[in-house]
Amino acid sequence: MENVELIDDVLVEPIISYSKRHGLTKLYHPNPKIVLQRMELYRGLKILDVGCGTGVLLYAIAKLIGTCELHGIDVNENAIRRAQKRASAKIEFRVADAARLPFTNDYFDYTICSNAFYYFKNKNRALIEINRVLKPGGRALILEGIGRMDYKQKLDKIMRQSPFIKFSRKFIERTAILQKSYLISAVK
Image (cartoon, rainbow, N blue to C red; front, side, top):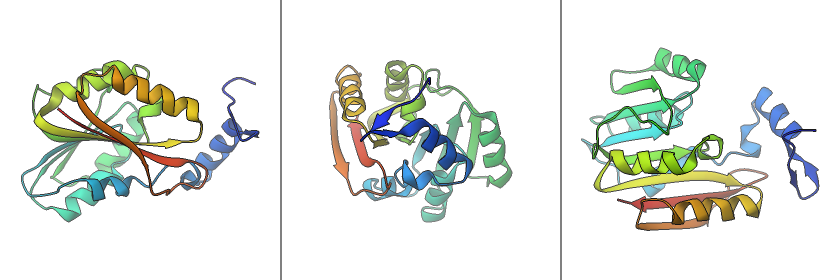
């Protein structure tokens, strides 16, 4: 069996596959809206959601703070198409890779990445790009579900090698059933 992980002696890949097919993402993915509690939201912000999927988090931000500039990128064309169908004039969605962000340097106040970082093929390059598009003083927030401590250790190592000088990482309130919610906050 390829792509099978063990967490507490449970075969995870078949469970993840089943849960995604049946809309049971709460088993593994922390609720992305807990990122909002860690943000200082105000009008005029420029926010990028890296790995935005169908844009759920961006829609929540748009509801909270009317006037702002919101962008979402994802490599999944179908997810972006679904996001664009619901899109308001406030949110721009694009198909793009986190390792090659199609934005100018020092542009965003926040970059957020919720439940997507695990899937990035080149995590180090993605962090370089996230840092590049952040304004000086801008913040990156990365939320991941952690089921295995070796993934947490790998994630911590990647952050130590990243261009971010100041970052914190911690477990926060658990919002996924089978995984802990792990939040990384980095300032450029």
